[in-house]
Length: 302
Image 1 (spheres, helix red, strand yellow):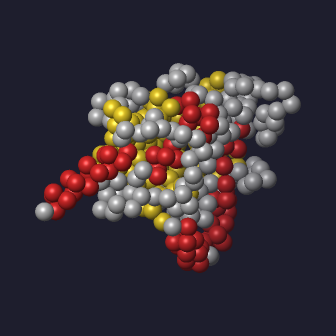
Image 2: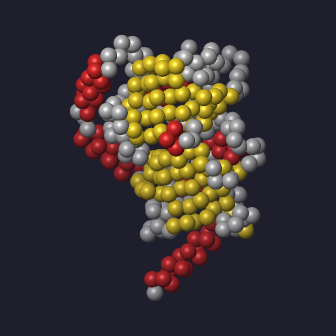
C-alpha cells in the first residue's frame, strides 16, 4: 500500500513540473525552460516558499559535468526575478529532496549574480546545478534559531581576540593590519598587474586554522579556483580584500579575523566554528581583464 501511494505521488509531482520532453536524457522540462531530474524524494510534500530559509548542498557544473563550485549554503528564498531563474529550482524542492537542474548559464551569470560569463563557459551554453536540500525554515524559525545561537556564543568574540593576539606574538608578525583587520604577508612578489572589479581571476589557495590544520586546499585537489572578482556569492569578504591587494604572480599569506571571514556563525558547512580567525595562503595565478568602464571604481583597495 505504501509503495503504491508513493508511486502515485511521484507521478503527480512529475506531472506538475514537466510539460515538455527534455532534450537531455533523464530530464524533464518545465514551462519556463528549466530541465530537471529529481534524484531523491523527501518525506514531506511541502515545498519551499519565498521568504523561507533553505540550507542546501549545491554544486555548479558545466554541461560536461566539470565542477566549478560546490559547497553548503543557507539562502533566503525570493520570488523568481525572471522566468527560468535558479530561484525556481529551489522552489521546486522539499526538505531532503535532491535534484539536478540544467539552466541558462547566461541568465545565471548575467542576471542572477550580475557578472560576465567566465572564460570556461561559452555564450549560450547551459550549466548544471545539483541541489540537495538539507533543511527548510520559515523566517520566524530562522530568527529564533539565530537569536538562541548568538546568546550561546556571546563570549566567543573576546576569546578569538586572545587567540589571535597569541598567534601574532608567537609568529612575531610585525606588519600592521589593514583597517578591516586583515594581515597581508607577501611571500613572493608578483608583477605590477592588479586585479580590478569584473576581472576573472585564477588562484590557488590553502585554508588553515591558526594551529596549522588544513580545512581546504585547491592545491591538494589539484584544481585552481576561478571566479569573477567583486561579485556576490564568490568568496568571503576577507579573501576578496586579500586578492584585491595582490598582483599577478604574487604568493602571500593572509591572516583573516572572523569579522571579515566566516563571522559569528562559522562556515555553512560547519567545518569552521563561529568567531574563528583563519589563515589563507594564496597564489594569484592569472588575471583576465573584464569590462573596465571609465570612472568606474575599479579597485577599492588601491
